[in-house]
Length: 271
Image 1 (cartoon, helix red, strand yellow):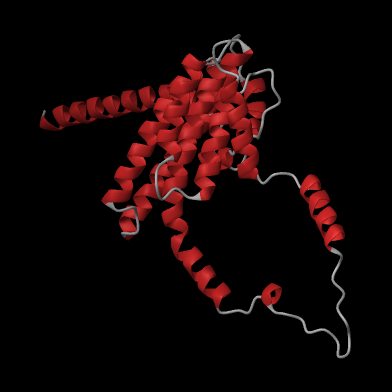
Image 2 (cartoon, rainbow, N blue to C red):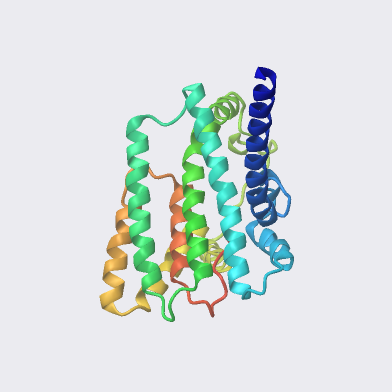
């Protein structure tokens, strides 16, 4: 009798485990379907635009094209965020992650960025599309990953800088003129003309171009929308300790938020 009861209990337990596995399996296909059977590493190996182009034809549901794009961006963003979490955990295990002060500064940066994002999207006329809002969320995840990536790359960068410092720079090593040779300086008028022509032919550097474009977009807005945006943007870029790389990314992000859908994008998404 005892053996029979034990067998029944074991059978019930097995049935419970099977039912739980069945419920888990029933949920799994949705996640697998959204990732098209690919891992996050495979998805992130592609650009977001390439992933969207691959994802949309595989959606069998009769939904608008815009909804497919938003869904694809959400999958990409989930993978991007998971990668950031793994990097953050790895840095924490090694004890090489950001200290409390740096973490607090970044949280303040994120809050300022989110405040500007909300104002910028609200200023869009016509209103921002769900696709633009989804891309804005992906941009914010990119800033978060970049923050932790700096701590991951720090040892390698320090070694590279040390290696560069130990080697002579051939560009700074003067090359002596041949014995007896005379150097001839160009006339001042020729030098001035050459300098002007070079300035006209040389495009502005990326930061200058970004600042100019951002200024154009702000100036096109009515004063009641322009001034709050200008102030909110100042809360971001006015922070000390921001790298030039991050500053440029912030300007390009702001341009993305403000530029009309009818315009040619100023720069492609950085992911």
